[in-house]
Length: 202
Image 1 (cartoon, rainbow, N blue to C red):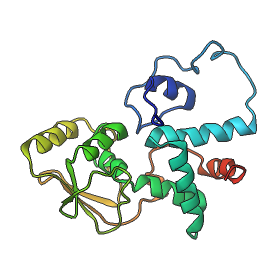
Image 2 (image 1 turned 90 degrees about the vertical axis):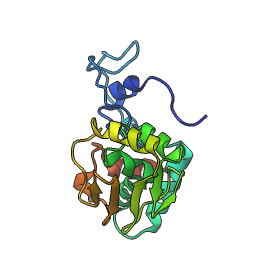
Image 3 (image 1 turned 120 degrees about the vertical axis):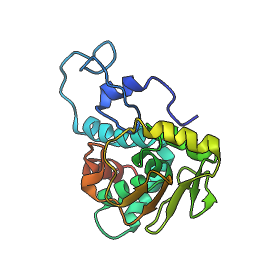
Image 4 (image 1 turned 60 degrees about the horizontal axis):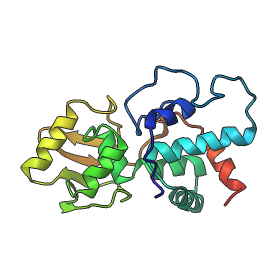
């Protein structure tokens, strides 16, 4: 079982704010565990590992999946770190989350897996589907699906919809107009450290 199913606030306390994982925030500002409050000098490896873990937990990926994305990003021209973030942001589950149709990425993944989401008029139940410019994203024409999404839209996970997405709340339809820009990625992460981490591993 590769997906993390443990306490989410424990991860947030260790890695910092992860908007895709949970909307809750911890009352404790120090890391979890017996030595959480002890001051210790962090190694360069530990810093790179933390940045990598932020991606894993925020987007809900297994290590194997993340390695696959890193390899894919390396084959594309341009900054590997930026391409990696764009690949993760353009996943269908994350796109549904960024539209406000679900409060977190895990709940957006469930929405997709249960067949509530359509892409270009067809139901797509694969959360890792890569959205492309021109894709039309909608909700299945079923009352239960529309009611579920409308309830979620009242309390979206993030306030602003990125500029590469156009959303019609009345019709519950959206269009992908481009590739997400770096400044619209909500997760605070240093992608260069993630690339450095994998440069020694993959």
